[in-house]
Length: 442
Image (cartoon, rainbow, N blue to C red; front, side):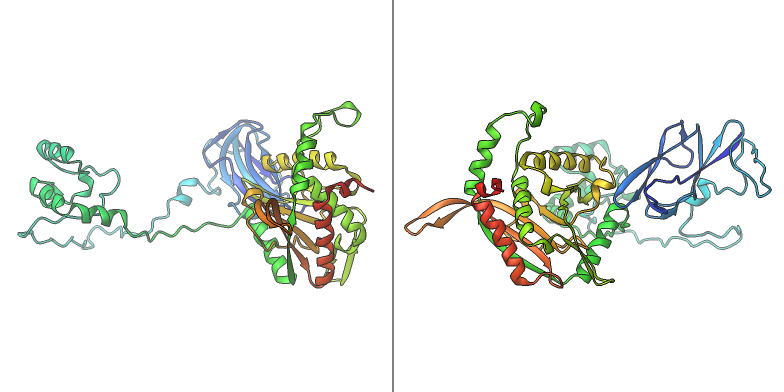
């Protein structure tokens, strides 16, 4: 038998370290070649680490949330034949079937007693205090017995409790060893409503400690960075999207093939129209499509418009990026948004697809609320927030008419974007969305 050491491999992109976000195995597990051992994360891209050999897990070299350097040992396996573990002398170490003494074994690591008892047999032991025998009325408790503990009661008492719909675990017995008698049932029935109320309103003092790891930790770091370094100004504007919704519905009814007679065009949502409106507005105000390096004091104004689409996934918030939105039409934008959203939710989005944005859209759809205060995706200088669409009465000069209304709640870096410029930008987008034909006019 031998020992095989698995090191954290180079996950590419010049990354020097990665965060361990999940173990798929535990000490003592038997694994086969290509079994996934762990998952690590770097820059929001999750990579699975497979086993190159068959063997038994002897040691795990990190805990969830630890940052591990590339090339560091993360798993030790007991394998048939010689492994790759080498002693300090440089020769291959051949170990016996018993785990090496120098390796930590799972039981000592996991079996840390909370209270140590003395090994001395002659040391006096504390005797439990004898409780005086109650001569008064039997005690009744609303607190349930510990899970798995069977109440002590005679068959007759059990039958009576069953007929009365009483859970014997809620009854405190006054007999020996807590045995429940008929008098306990009677006392419980007398206080039944209070007992039930006390049980349903029992206090819960439990505290669960949850370690912030993986994507959640990266989100926390990014949000803290954005809020601590960027002075936000948020501008909220109401937009009438009635005409846009009519146009969108008409376009979705036309099941025409895509470019070159290829795949059928996707079902359009509001986002592709907003993206194209942003492209047109940025053409007039290119400073909105910038990254601000506040340490160097340089604004990097980009020609390519790379729109990040904030997406909620089972793991948390990620921002896949539609690259070069300025070169895409409505349907191309729609296709790319759908593709990236599916990749993000399935966890298959690449690092390149999750980076490089120059301006971001955040939308919660029907959960979007009336107004929000979105946090800028640092080091960008603007983020456009989409709130939910609602039918509201709007005065047209003579009467109230129902219109589909939606708010845009957008935040800007006030160090780079003045309030006037932010307002001009959003008003331009408003005009384009309220008169959607303008979106298609070059």
